[in-house]
Length: 113
Image 1: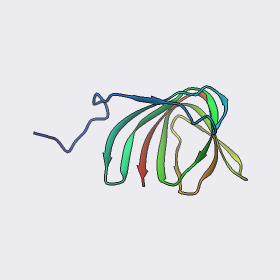
Image 2: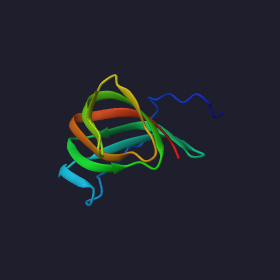
Image 3: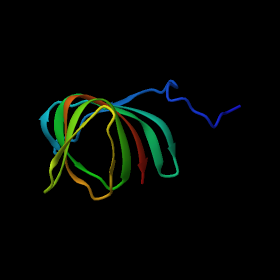
Image 4: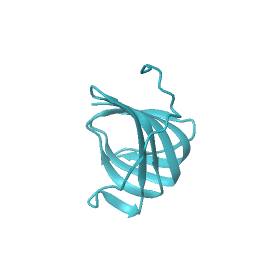
């Protein structure tokens, strides 16, 4: 019988990738993602990145909660914002700028397309 309650600690195979070469600014960041749920334009899980800096462009809506590490998000034409463990924020469609991981960062996320 399937359950409608899915523990975050459920065993999910991680996926790893790196930013596209044309978006990479510095370092050699490696992304590890544990997608816990994907359905009807909604995605949620855990994401981790090692240090580095790359350009980001959001067409989707994303809620993030930082679990560990330190990152700096800078919107084009805006102020740099440092995020650390315990911080939560939303990235709206149209956000364009950079994500820089200073200390390996882990976050929970919910994405709506």
